Amino acid sequence: MTTVAAVQNCLNAAEPDDPALAYCLVNDISYVPYRPLNAGQLPDPAAALRWLLGLGSLVAPIPGTADPNHLRALFAPVT
Figure 1: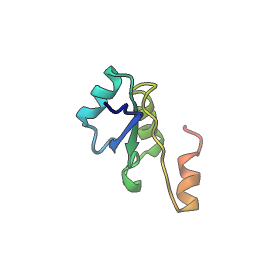
Figure 2: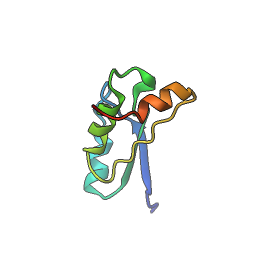
Figure 3: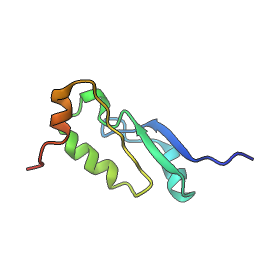
């Protein structure tokens, strides 16, 4: 038997359904959404991150970017 430390699958507001997420939440397994900001295609990245964080404490979205302007937009104050 192998212990699973975490699951990483595609999950974001444009692709919100992954049956593995429910399994992880029930079985106390960390879940890391892959492409949480849909490669910059979501109109409100801050809202997308709030939605993901609201799915539970086991969900750990890790947004990434190579564009400094995109990075600043991710951490801009929410109004």
